[in-house]
Structure formats: structure tokens, C-alpha cells
Image (cartoon, rainbow over all chains, first blue to last red; front, side):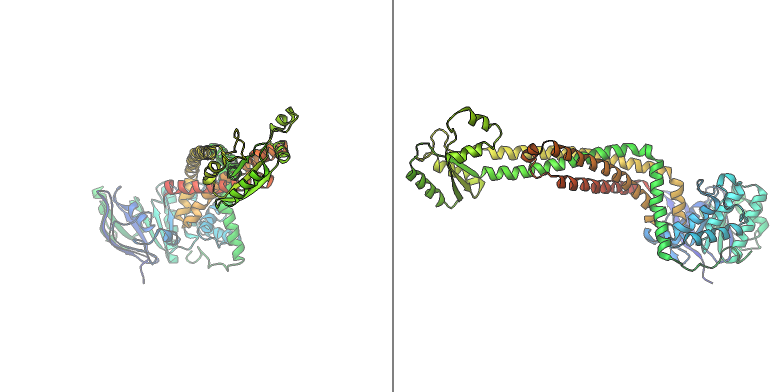
Amino acid sequence: MRPIVEFAAVTRAYGARVALDDVHFELLPGELTFLVGPSGAGKTTLLKLINREIRPSSGRLWVAGMPAHQIKASRVAELRRRVGVVFQDYKLLQRLTARENVAFGLQVGDLRVSDEEARDRSLDALEAVGLGDRGDAYPHQLSGGQQQRVAVARAVVGQPQLLIADEPTGNLDQETAWQMMDLFEDIAAWGTAVLVATHNVEIVTRLQRRVLTLVQGRLVRDQPAGRTGRMAWLASS
Amino acid sequence: MAGVLVKGRFPRRRLIQAVATNLVRHLFGGAARSWARNIGSTAPALGSMTLLLLMSGLVGLTGFALHNLEQVESGQASLLHVYLRDDAKPPDVASLWRHLLSDARVAGVTYVNKDQALERAQRIPGLPQLADATESNPFPASLDVQVKKIDDVAAIDALVRYDVAVDPVYPTSYDKGAYQRIQAVLFGTAVAGFALLGLLGFVAVTVTMNSIKAAIHARRDEITIMQLVGAPRWMVRGPFVVEGAITGAVAGVVAGLVTFGLTFAGIAAASGAFTRFAPGVTVTVAAVAAAVVLLVGLGLGSGSSLISLRRHMET
């Protein structure tokens, strides 16, 4: 099976400060992986590299078959259409309804999508995240958990090969956070690789999925699913 | 839930219609909405650009008129009037005529008698009163010499000035340096005009760039989302270019209409003076100038937006 993400000796430095140091790993289709580590460990830098918001200082990085370490600026949009992104603060447009937010993500990424198709697909995506009946609600009319679900629907409606989430449960209560994780498991089961950066130790330990641990920019541990023991980074945070 | 989340791709029905609808909505609709929403921050840019375009239109028309005037002056300056004494003998005049015609620097010679000179003078402002003030005809007969090169007029003047048939008091119409003075005035006017336009252009571009910067700031969430969901770069930047073009177009329409209106009113009110002091400036020329002002506005607005985008929008 071809990996969706492949890091090979990737280093990223901001001036003299090394944010990510000689990182190697691969993500396979259908794999739900947690990215953990203390604040400043390099989790966000790693996600930004995958989404080509930044370039690696050295090393090679392949995302959904594209060489993210050397693609031209004109092809970045193509790469991003293969990657869905979910943020801690949802990043929804307040002037659009839930359905319009999802459809917006679909249509600005692909002009060929008609209104009819966008409406049907966004409603399907909202239904899949449990918000089929809230399509006409504006973000301010939804709870934090519901807004995050809309953000997930927007991220997956374009059928990306990879979903990355940066602290998606950071603003959610524990019960809603678990619902969100159920959703990520469902998405992974469908075949999409899912990478979730999180500080939520309880979720990581109970779900027993693969865990990548970053400490001071180095990938210090890569624990396969079912073998996530003590969180090594807790000791160093 | 596996397999439920996203269905298979829909058939691409009415592809062109879908692309056109999305383009209009996101490029033009988004730009128009943003422009209307940010009208407060756009107003200074709109004002300065309107002023610039109006000045450009008027300076352009003035420049066109001055160019035509210069052509007329150039033609007149290379036409040397050799005034004949009232008592000049026909053989002397004929001799002078032949002498001039044989000169390689001369393109042609025309004899103008006193009646024709009077008739011509009556078409020149101020001179009819002078002609009416006296019962006799004060205007001399002349040989009008068309010189091929304006630089040779002085030499021809020197050649005929002391001829026996030529009036010793006012021998010719030659005015040393007159043409050069006209050219110097025109050059100075052009330099001042361009300097003023350059200054206004700088102000307009700077203010428009700032208004686009404000628009980018106001829509930063939308831009971020568009970039992250994989919208092409032109799709993210396009609405701002269109927004700048809208500012330029509105300024261009206002400035173009004012330019056309002022010129039209001027022509209607004093067509004689317009023909004399602004030769070639007609209603058609004014309409063309207005259209050019509109196009310049479009270019200036969208160009300023592009510069601002390059400076203020991350990729």
C-alpha cells in the first residue's frame, strides 16, 4: 500500500531555531494517527509542512503523491485539495450557513461543481457528521462541537486522501471531544488517512491508535496501534 | 458509517454553466459585495483616482490641442511673408519672385496683392478694427514664401530683406526665435503636466493599495479558508483585483463624464475660440478621451490591487 504521507529526513528551521529535526515517518490510507508532544514540540510545524503552508529547510516530503518539498507555488492549491484541514477555532465564515460553509469549501476549490451538486454533497457531508438537520443554521446558532463538525464536513466533502486536525478538541468539552474522535474513526474507516495533533492524553490512551511523539522537534517515538503505553512526552513537558 | 460520508462524484452536468456561475459569484459577486461593504475605506482612493483621471483627461485634451497648435504654428513659422513696398515696380517683383523660386530651399511662392492682404487681415482677431480705422488699405502686398525647412527661414529672410522691391520698414514676417519660444513654452507645459500627473498617480496608486490592504485585512478569514481548501491562487486574488478595477471603473466613469461634459460645454459655448485655441478638439475627440479615461481607470485600479496583493497577501 502506497503511503499518503512520507517524511524523509525532514528538517525545518526558523532562523537559528530548529522546529523540526530529521523527521522520518509514513502515514497509510485508512490510518488514524495521533501526533502528540508538549507545546513547542513542532506539531503545528509538521502539519503546516504537510499542507505546504511552509517548506522544509531540508529533506523530502511527499503528500498524496506530490513532492511537497519542491512543488511550485502554482501547484500548492492542487496539493491542498488532496488534504482536508480542521482547526481548533473551526474557521467558519459567519455570514454563511453551515451548508454554505461546506459548499464554499467545495466550490472555491473546484469551479466545475454546480450549485446543485454542491448542495447535495454538502448536505450528505453534514448528515454524515450528524448535522443533517442544521444545514440552514449560521455558525453563531451552533454549539462549539457542532461548529467543529461543520468544519470536519467542509474538510472531507472534497474527498481528500488525508485529513489533518490541529487540536480539534481544544475548545470542546470531554463528551463532545469523544464524539469528534468517533467521527475521525469513521472517516479513517472509510479509507482516509487521519492525523490528529492533540494534547488530550485520555483520548490518545483510550483509543489505542498509532501515536507519533514529538519532543523538541524530534520524533522520539512512533508507537503502533494497540501499543500506546505511557506518554513519554508527558515526562518532558 | 464507513462508505456513507461522501458519495461518488456527480456527473458533470452543464459544466460551462457551473464554471461561469461560480466565477461570477466568487470573483465578481464577492468583489462587488466587498467593495460595497468597504466603501468607507475605499472613498479616499475613489476620490484621488477620480481627481487623477479627471486631470489626466483634461491634460490629455490640452496636450492634444497644444500638439495641433504646434503643428499649425510650425506650418505658419515656415511660411515667410515678404512684404513689398507700395511703389515696387512689377519687373522688380517678378525678378524677386523668380529668384526665390530658383532657390532649392523654397517649396513655393505665392503673390498676395493688397486686397487679398486686407481680406486675410479681416479674419484675424483685432485687425478688422485696424483696417476700419483708416480709409486706405494699410496692408501691403506680399510674396508668401513656403520654406521647406523651418531652419532655413532665417537664411531666406536675409536673402530678400534688402531687395529693391521689399518694404524697407517691415521687410518680412520673420521673427527670430519665435518658433523656438513656442516650443519652449510647450515643452515646459508638457513637463509640468506630466509632473503633476505623476504626483497624482503616485497618490492614487498608494491610496488604492491601502484600500485593498484594508479589504484583505477585512476578509482575512475568508482568504485563509480559501487558501486552505485549495482554491487556486488566481481565485483567491481575483476578487481583490476586480475590487480595485471597480474602484478604477467608477472613478473612470465619473472623470470621463466630467471630461466629456466640460469639453462639450466649452465647444457649445464658444466654438470659434475652441477652434482657434484648441484646434482638433471636437465632440468625438472628447468622447474618445472619456473612453480612454475609463480604460486608464480600470487599469490603474486593477494594477494597484495587484501591487498591493503582492505585498500584503501571503501564499
